[in-house]
View (spheres, rainbow, N blue to C red):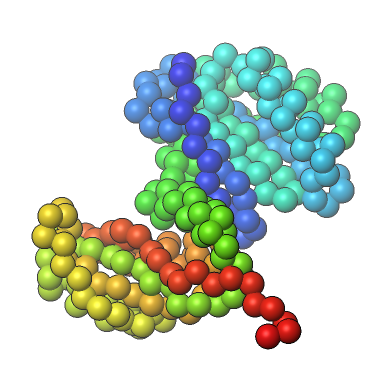
Length: 244
């Protein structure tokens, strides 16, 4: 089965984590694979060392080779990783249990359960609009850094959200103001599917976690009024010399 892997930053148990998901499984027919199998690996050092990270990659390759099902994705934080598969039967867990027991560097456990509706894939792994936007944030931050932005200084960040009808913009703007944003200019783009817009402003650094939290807040608020976040921009701020 062909894979379309997509990675994005989110959080697991309140901690920053890197998510990897096979986007192709969204519409795939997995009726013959009603079991979710997962392998959880934890660091024995508190946070993953370089050697442990290599073992994680090796373990995933071995699991993929052993199992006949479909790789759904993985979640990796600083101290643990969980990889997920949809498999044909619960007995397939025995195929990777031996790998987990023989692993000496990592603390590994294997679990399996019936999940014909693929809840873990749909509700945990598959990215919604807010999660998808975090990858756009990553690319934009890299571009800003390439153009000399120091990223750490605080500055005004402006977010642009658009809606299908003008009355929705005012309702959204008031809710955004109550959520800590300053309301900027109203916008109109007649050639867009969502032509009525408004800009929101907040002072922030370009720490990716802060930007992700900000865009996620706007995306989820805009969705209540059939709108979406189109893009954000900010002035480029270079490094400030202490001798100035």
